[in-house]
Length: 216
Image (cartoon, rainbow, N blue to C red):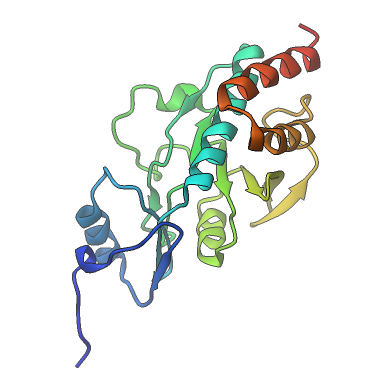
């Protein structure tokens, strides 16, 4: 007979990932409860396949920088926004669940202000999600099922924009949320420059670049 172990018995080092197959939705819900909200691991679930990963420090640094860059752009443009970080987004009907590295509500900002719990049957998904090194097929499939409109994917300090079209993600040279700012080229350059500079300095330089793009 198969051997069952508790999820708490699985210990991952930084950068490691574990894949569990044939996990029912009810088991997925129980695992989320067992893992708790205050954890460092990230999960992705799609139709019975669950992946749990422990990010590396450089992953976290890139995630924070990208989120800061986006906040700077939105603030300089005077746009309202809400960030829900690595909130778990799940939909039983789609049998999909995902935790982005970061996520933002921009167009749908007003719809989630003050929300303590999200129900994707009635609440919108984020307008934009950020993922560092998005290579897992389980993650991509979960994103496609939830139909998050835009993903910023970062790999090797390069930003790639993917827009959701006809059930799939396609590459785009421009952002749907920020069509008038060359975010892909600009952010990629600042990420590359950030390797040998404090994040505080890069943030200041990036704000000046955004102001120049906006004619401020």
